[in-house]
Image (cartoon, rainbow, N blue to C red):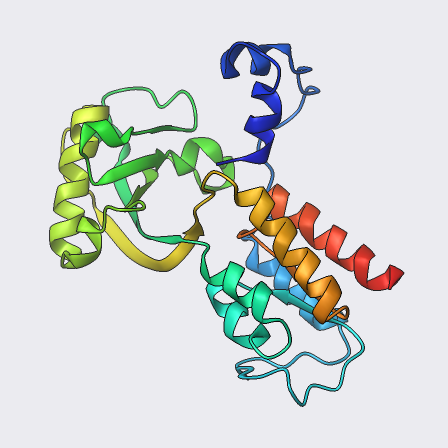
Length: 257
């Protein structure tokens, strides 16, 4: 599922032993973000570029006048764009499965939360049968979001092979999520406010042999369309840090071509 975890487990009896042997991080915050939200990073980048075109969907690369193209897209979106240039790469891209999720953000009065939220959240294994797959304690993880009177939490619902949450009305979903969080966090009352965000086909699934598939995609593009590079969460890591690293690698490939 995650290349970093695979590296930690390689050559050891267990993943836990592998993680214990990793060097401890330097003192400082474990999580970093941009004040005001990550959208500010995109906005600043767009302001510095000479030609940015928004809300102009690209349906084909056939008439694109460019020396190099970086496709930072989900695999299923990149596939049809590459069908003419590299059918082999397009076929492999279509084979990458994706899961859809719904994110439920809730605001609870501080006195409603019985337990001290000492940490950043928790994960829920599939065997529990819950709609909630993970919960982030936003106001603990990101101090800038903390207030004196409310606690913010964000619950993820939906996973590959389990689309139950996607078919529920928002109000019903929030009720179900609140009930599950109450079991986990001993909540004393309902939330004061909530918001639901849909992320269809947003999580690429790293099945056994995924990295070999990525290598076949890259090899096919190098052979059939050497000016085109693919990058993003569908390839060598889902997390933000992994996507940044892959973006830097893509830029180096383009500059070295």
